[in-house]
Length: 186
Image (cartoon, rainbow, N blue to C red; front, side, top):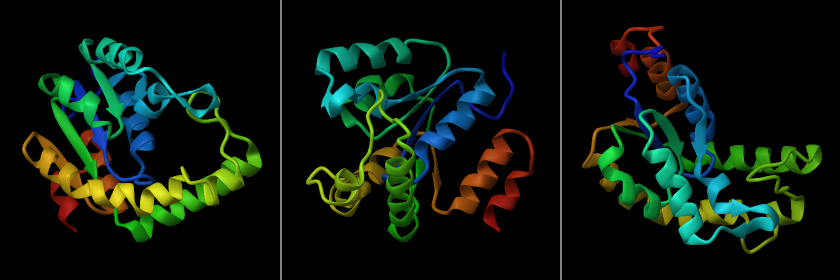
């Protein structure tokens, strides 16, 4: 059942850590009437171990073969393999001064509430702030190095490039038919 004629059937949401990929993917998926696919859930197994590549590739291939889906995550090895199926990229290109505080807040809240993520894994304060695989460290190093190539890749395909939370909110409202497109420029 289509609930939005403005939203393509197959959408891939990308962007830096803390930009809101999973949140937006969940909202878009709800409007398409599908479950969102979060690549972090496919990649990270219990105990923060990585799924074998052949297992994760098969899981993503199963989703990508469907008629409608919303996938979020930056994993190049998945995106490039299913490039022909992607109808729209949504690039959440929010600045570090927005995304980093979100990651700090999320790490603290998840550590305190024991809210599971990525297949039941738990974030802890030491893992968030002091581990060499800290998401905060990843955001400061890996994420920044990868945003340029990600922008170039997305620009070569049908895409929406959103740079502020206001643009994200307005675009989401537009594709769910709640506001006119020209308000995106405000």
